[in-house]
Length: 254
Image (cartoon, rainbow, N blue to C red):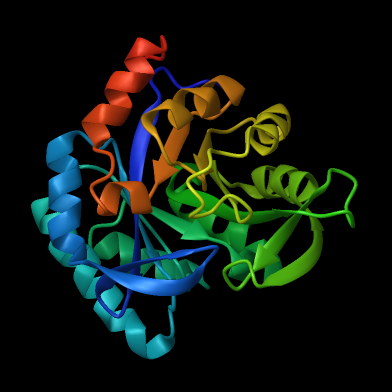
């Protein structure tokens, strides 16, 4: 199911109300105020903005709701918020402060019924299943789902889990390559292609963007949207630079 236009999505990893970024999920550095960055990206033409609450401890939760509310008041592109979403009630609260979609990851692995509970109540379009995927010799596809920011491997084959999650009601897959994350060496095209084959819903490719030339191959491999974090926060690339490169490569963008 191809989208009409490829989407470009900056991702803000938020920790205690600040944007942070590391490599392979480690050594987090402060990258600025999330509301300011979201405003900047919206002005540059971001199609959506994703917030991931990377620590998502209970005491941090109020900070995240506040950040989402302040962003939604000033930024008029769709907001997806993930990190620590454990119940349909969490989703209800995120939507009430201005989020458009909720990302679920670890909680859905721990209790797959959560996917159906959220989709039945709010619609599949609200639910983004986030998959942190690593290469592994322990699964048939060669890819395994991880939790805790890539630190803990599950026994789930990434493709089997993606298929099951879609059947349960996930409306979109955010596929993040832990191996590529923060390396700026390009997206994992093999992983994107395999996800495209099993997915009847849009696939967002994440992990590894380094140059403007990295984005078009991800779309060609089967992604409907491309997501990046550090290259945007550092100013190495702008959203408009990426869209120009996609257009040049013959990809339709908004």
